[in-house]
Image 1 (tube, rainbow, N blue to C red):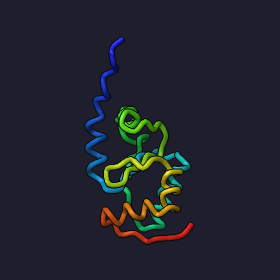
Image 2 (image 1 turned 120 degrees about the horizontal axis):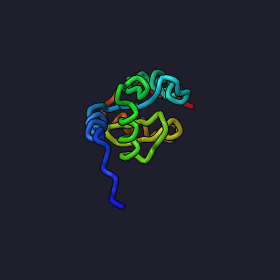
Image 3 (image 1 turned 90 degrees about the vertical axis):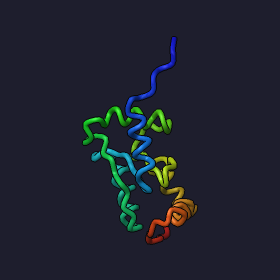
Image 4 (image 1 turned 60 degrees about the vertical axis):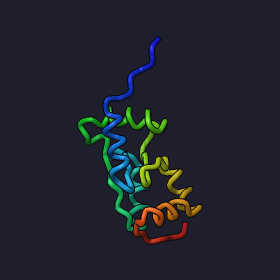
Length: 115
């Protein structure tokens, strides 16, 4: 059996990942996506959000995201073109300071807060 061809939307997703310093893929009905958005709002950081359930190519984008990250859940968050993960990884990174360090490296202004 031959290898499956990569998603035709993979280049689109790769371009999106490179285009936005803070990027989140999500759905409008996802509880954890809303929570991630709230954390970004508290920090005064505006991620670019792509709602897979609103995008006409959302299903194909989700397949490409899985190919790139191995993550099949949302939110799917990228900082500076690097895959952070989902809500758990966001909160862990905020607690450890690694997310704030990445914001500083990327020269993204933010308001720090404590958990």
